[in-house]
Image 1: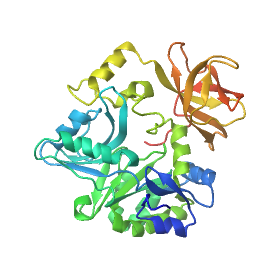
Image 2: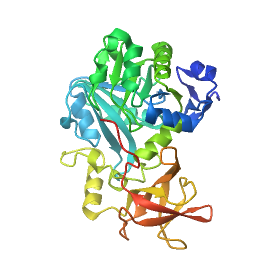
Image 3: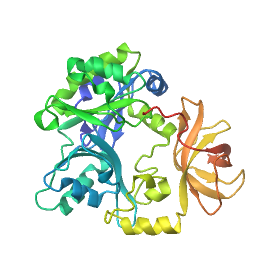
Image 4: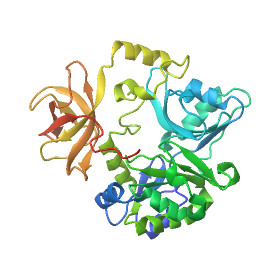
Length: 375
């Protein structure tokens, strides 16, 4: 770890577990553990895995009009949810490009928590604070709060065991719901969120950074008891790619709009105002020049981001891979790619990825590439 990288509150725990650490959004985070990424990935699909995702931003927005302020800035419509619910949303620029994607937790109209991506957190905080009306406070608690994720079919069992009596009822939370325990985040407690980034039943725990090591120990013991273990960000990436979930900087960016990325469902099109509204309405009306597609390899080879997509072997370029990996679940290469809309590409069609000069045939498939079990 270099001096420039921020350490997770659980850094010492990861070192003790002999994790491979790497840079992620300006933080030193565990990429994998000695068992390897495939084993970690499989534990999440079959039992449970524990992730440290404390690099994610944590931004409380409070005060009269806080929800209305967020709703006038971010794409999704907060009017669709009520207290105790979470929502996926986007921050766009004036051209419709995506500055970041994030989850917002609505406790009350004057009490919300935004969780942006690590690398974009400071920029999002500044933009929201600059536009905030009097009485609305935007606070950066990135270093004060930790985020842990327990994901997998036995995650509810593990989380309940780790929390003991305080955790009774958390297994009953519906998808994209949350509950506060021990007074909640404002009083040194914790927030249990039925959210995640793996496509499995799962929970995210937000709590004070100083309380994170003890919670990690309890969760890790409980996860191990059901047959799982610690998981790094490499497994998180293979899991989300199998689900077709976007990663900012890959499937979403200031050069890639929600319309192109297939994220139009996270836009409140009928809202009178949000950042990038005019540009997005115009793009939706005209139709995007490219769209995100999920691809499954039918030959041997692993696609990687940046590789060219062709309309056939020796054919013309029609797109670019935004994310590519070997799928431990499917035992083949999978990818997400932005593909031109000039030639219609439909599910079931065959394309080719140029893998370092070798043609890799791929089939266009409908995401997710593996079944979702989030609900």
